[in-house]
Length: 239
Image (cartoon, rainbow, N blue to C red; front, top):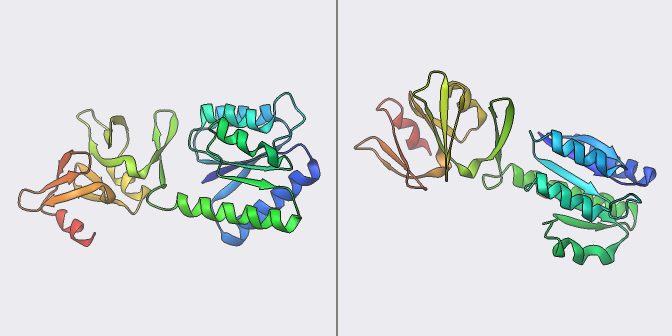
């Protein structure tokens, strides 16, 4: 699921942007929801601060007629959300260089011209974002760790293994490990890229560098290894 946030001070334009997004979601049947549509930048900031479960798309006006402008709001957002997609929709075309100066990594900058142009640009950028989110390169996996749901890039996941501590699993990432409560049988359902290779291991097929069928070992791109059982190693021959 993707959270979508709109911050626009003009109520008519805010409603138009909201309608464009809602129509795209319905027509393309994507898993996105408008969670905030407001003229108050603090409402946006508080939502981001208190909701880090899902990836986010931000549509921000620059001139908000508030204590802070859209670029300053985007800077505060970036402090909390380094991967969210920020789209500026504004009449302030001359402000574009500031988005680079502040290193905001904006996904798009849409100038308010005709309604048709704005609608087309919104549809185009949403199509690009959802396509990338569903790709291996940008796909995210949500895993409940403690009281929080962590959103982890699929490309960082090597494999899962059972922990010596009862009812716990170890998530092996490209550079570190995370231990959490869970069951391997539930992990497999998180992604078609996850394959059970042993009663104690589930691997991300995209992170495998080589397979040693003689010694029943799987090698990963970060140098780690795990075992595969004779029963399950045949699953790897399908990738």
